[in-house]
Length: 37
Image (cartoon, rainbow, N blue to C red; front, side, top):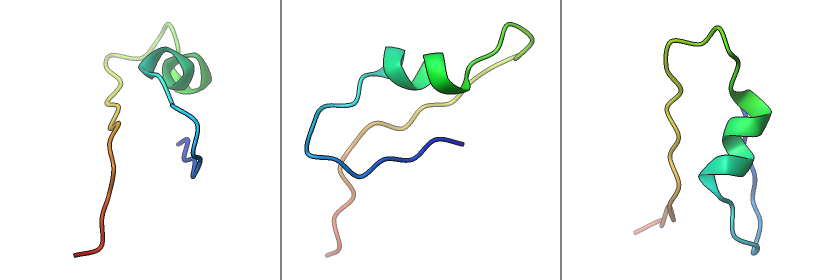
């Protein structure tokens, strides 16, 4: 699992390099803004 709180953009490629593996069947990535409404 990789999480980050940052004002800088997070790209899918950055996340996949950190968590992806050649043996993985799939990797799910959520990129977005979570707001407390």
